[in-house]
Amino acid sequence: MVRVILAAVAVFVLWQASNMLVHGWVLAGEYAKHPEVFLAKDEMRVPLLLLVVLAHATIFTKIYSWLISPKSILAGVIFGLLWGVAHGIGMGYGTYATMHVPLGMASSWFSLSVVQGVLAGAIVGAIIRRRDEPAPGVEG
Image (tube, rainbow, N blue to C red):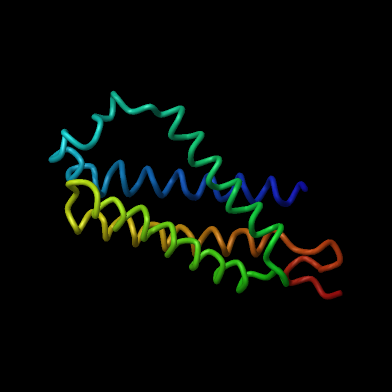
């Protein structure tokens, strides 16, 4: 249970930091061009946003913990890649299909989701393992 909590926190930190970098810096200018679609920074519901990222990280981690076997960094990366592609399609292109956002922005959201998924998968794969498995790099 401790490893699952540690992994969920690590994924949350990764996703929050990368969201701040990409959305708060890289795409900030694009968001500012579309005030009819995006809230200004001072209008954002930051506590809700943090809760959403935490819930997402926790669910990602629990799915890996409960359903992926055998557990390994490679299995985590594959799980993260699949999660990232599925999430990115909905986040990026699903939004593009229903809202007035530029295709480049949708593609950026898709790409970010894939990268975040792969990195999060590597994290959960490295941290969460069966109780009888030695830590990576430790001979049994």
